[in-house]
Amino acid sequence: HDVDFHTITLAGLKEFVIPIDWQIRYTGLMHGIGGWFDLAFVPPPSSLHRGAKSSTVYMSTSPYSPATHWQQVRLLLKQPLAVNAGQVVRGLVSMKANDQRSYDVEARIIALDEEEAAALTDEGLSRLMDEHKSRSRSAIWYLHDQTYNYAYTGEPLEPAKPENANLYLPVDSLLADSIAPTQQPASSIVSSVQGIADSLTDFIVTASSDQDSNAMQY
Image (cartoon, rainbow, N blue to C red):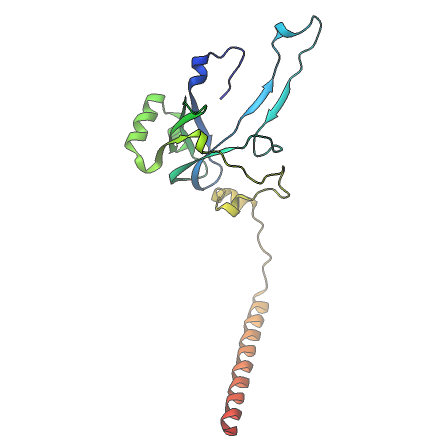
């Protein structure tokens, strides 16, 4: 959602709606919505001296950017939403200014199959959310209560692995990317099993002998 501060009105800042249309890459549970803002400081042409070139300064509060004075927000759902890789999450996030110099945030989202999402109109989206409660979620948050200060210093040392958060790629992708393990000859497997069995037998015999010796001493 883009906001142009050169043209936006006060009413447009006090209340606006952000559409959601997310392609799901991993199968897992969606626990909520993360939020942050990026800024592009672009001087209006009228403020430039004749012949001067416009220069843009960018700043991001994204978790993928160096830490700033601002933190991200997390808007947690009371009940997580199960999503499958390849699905689309559609919905709306409504922002309304409050007397805390912040916003009241209301969201409605639903998980859709890709074909279903492509054919869906805005009117049909609202109706589908009402009819399919099991795959839709709605919530209200107060933005000023949702800011968290993480001990974050910049780029992580290692890229985050989705599998560590119980997120999984589609089965077809996993099969395509996987490398078949080296097959061991059947004879070596039988030898390994026989070796384990022999070791267990030796242990049982030794333990039995020790118990007999102790019994004789008593």
